[in-house]
Amino acid sequence: MVKSKTPKRPTRDEFVLEEIGNQLTEAYQEGSDILLTVWGWEEPVRGQIDQMDSRTGKVHIKKDGVITKVPFMDIMEINYPRD
Image (tube, rainbow, N blue to C red; front, side, top):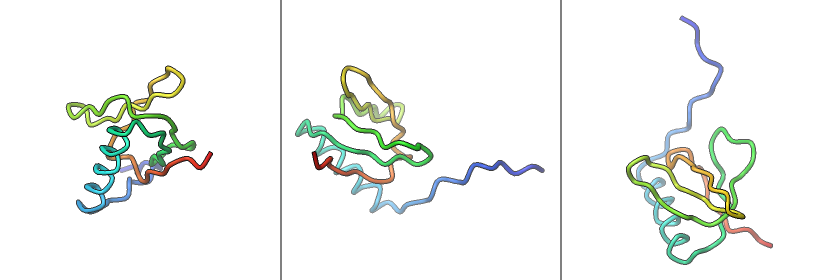
């Protein structure tokens, strides 16, 4: 059996996931600009939450009219840009 080189996504407990969910909801309601650290992505994702799709489990981040769909389970951290 060949093992893939991709490291597994770190597991987080339900409290961490709930906290991320709460932060996303708050940022969505306030229309805040956010910076997401996404597991396996080299660059952080910046923008405003356009939609939270519970069916696909993806958060749609909009910046300059472009939408990036980020899987909720891959979001490691949420920050607010300083500038």
